[in-house]
Amino acid sequence: MNWLDSVVFLFGEAIVFALGSFLALSVAIFFDYLRQKKRNVLVTSKILPTNSQLGIQKLPRLAERINLDPRYECIVTFRGLSKQNYEIFLSGKNYKKKIGFKTIFLSSNFNDKNMYDLNSSFSIVLADRFGHITENEYLEFLDHIGQLKTILGKDTVLQKPLPTYSKIYKSSKQAYSRISKLDSILEFTLNSSDSIDLNLLRNYMEKLGYIEIMPSKFVLFDGRESKLSTAEFGFSKNNFRFLFNIAVSEDSPRDLKDMFNGLRWIAEYFQCQILDKNQKTVTKNSFMEIIKQVEIRQNQLKEEGLNPGSRLSREIFHLR
View 1 (cartoon, rainbow, N blue to C red):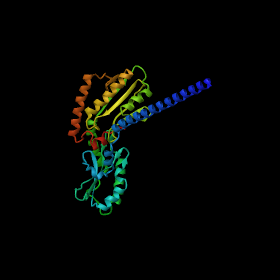
View 2: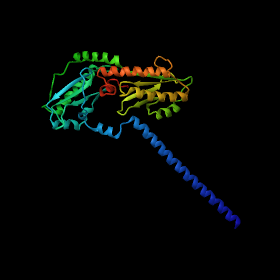
View 3: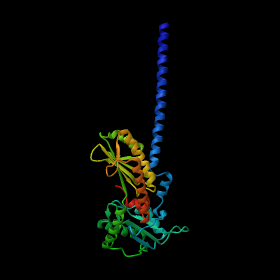
View 4: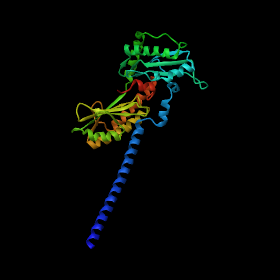
């Protein structure tokens, strides 16, 4: 029986060892899952709205108290709105209408007592960084205004006659000229002597908060889902290009420093140089000069009524 006891003893030890290994592996997998989940939450919190922001976004645009600017927007104002027909209007999703890449914005003047007023305005930008409003876009905007008139009821009237496209075109050219002088996109390139491995790069981009929206094209969104930065390969796999949008950031110097620290981290791993748009190496001193120029551009935007990070700046200077 001694040999039988030995066999049982050996099998018992093997079973205990197997169970112990299984439990240890299960615990490791569980903690790795928690670590990954925590990392995803941290990354997502940088690029998606918080719960409180989502709550604000669910409110009708009426609550945003939008300030419209006739220098940059074609504005149509209705008078004679009642609480009832306005609620009917909001029950649909007409205030979220988009024409191409342009959004139709709703703004209403109301007081804190009844939350409603007789005036509501709808606007579309006269121009953005890609060009002035086209005739087709303008005609589609007018069609939408006609539909709104029907929804809002027969008692609503236009405050002013609708402008002709020739008048809008003239205004849009003036707006586009002003916008072109303020367009604010910074460009940096990671330049490597060897091809940059996309699979390895994906891991680094994810840790920086970038989302791959299509193969090898990445986007960094801010808390309001505006494109703060885009990144993709250049003419070869040796060059990876980053664009940073000054106008959509409320604090461009801070956000640019954060992004550039990420570039330095990637450049160190892949043994890359960081080049500016003129293909010159970006040093510590030259980067500080870039920050100074960013601060100057932010002040220029403010002087022209396009506050960095504002609703209007995000609409006009958006990246596609």
